[in-house]
Length: 172
Length: 325
Image 1 (cartoon, helix red, strand yellow):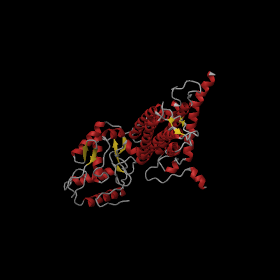
Image 2: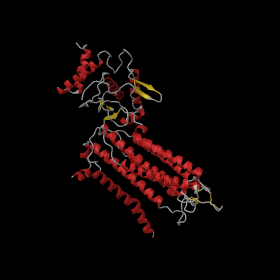
Image 3: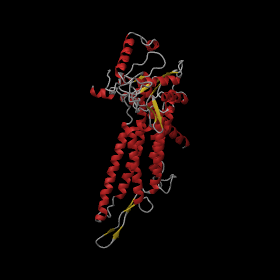
Image 4: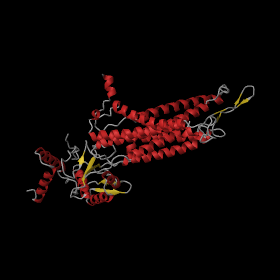
């Protein structure tokens, strides 16, 4: 079920979070994210009752999907109106999320094409993408961490707390 | 007499269509592999497919009732007041497009009955859905069929005889020096062609508008993404299949009628090369028209079958199980 292609993108399915508001999902094999068949389509999940603003939930989930390769450069995101309709939220909320993603270099907006996932800049890290050096290895280790944590019965929030703690303490 | 007429209206236009709809729903659920066990689908997905089946059945029955009503309208010479007295069979000619419009309108109303997203947790696929992507090959074939009908109507309008409702065969000069002329109708010249073109345009616009509603429907709460996508594809296929049935049937009938009029009558059949090729051309048009009508009918019926979720095993219908047993 798991495997990484030469580009360092693992296109396996992620198990949905057992609880918690804002967990992106990539269902099926690979995530071209395009077409209307639903196969392999990445999925957004928002919790309107969460303390995290909805636009931030959308932004962070899209960035996470790009980081794990579920969304590839050139993949087109739904129009803000369409995504807002699907989630039954205000259009402005989706537009803000897209603006933040564009400011972070994750997406670009083009006329007549819409919002597409941006290609990572050469040699530079951007929000939502692993550093070029050892990217595949880091991604693989991250997945190992997630598997081990879930096998140990930790919730996704607990895993995120661990990672935040490691970031704060410099990983030492 | 008034009581009898009222009874006919109630039975023919209300009771019978409702009963037929329910019967179709029951039969397809029982024999069409649409049951819960055959899909291994979550309960919410099963409910969604049942709702889609009800919408499809209602729209199909409504369109068939419309077609029946239109076909039952009086033709000139048969008594009564035909819609267009000077164009025999006008209502019957545009009837398929009226039925297609009814199919789309009822489907559109049904699309508005899907539940809106509610609850605190909501999901949506990050997939750009368009009318073109959802329509796929069926939409392309529908447009090809429509284009063929447009070209045929323009051609027949140009070659039609005086009045546009008949085809004038070339005059035949017999060995004794006498001259014979003949014409045959009905022929789909401009008196039919213009309304048919108008009906086709209206049908296509309404079809695209309805397909847009299907495309823009919000994902169904509690239904996994691939099942939701399968329901959406099923809706689109049934809509386009139904319209293809009517448009393709109209094209087939137009070619058949034109071919029958082009074929020379027995009176001038022996008139030499001037008319000999017309016999073959007329027969070819009739055969082509019949083939297109049959294929469109089959395509329309096949579109009624539900679409699988991506990656799902083939559903086993109870009919297939009965045959194997």
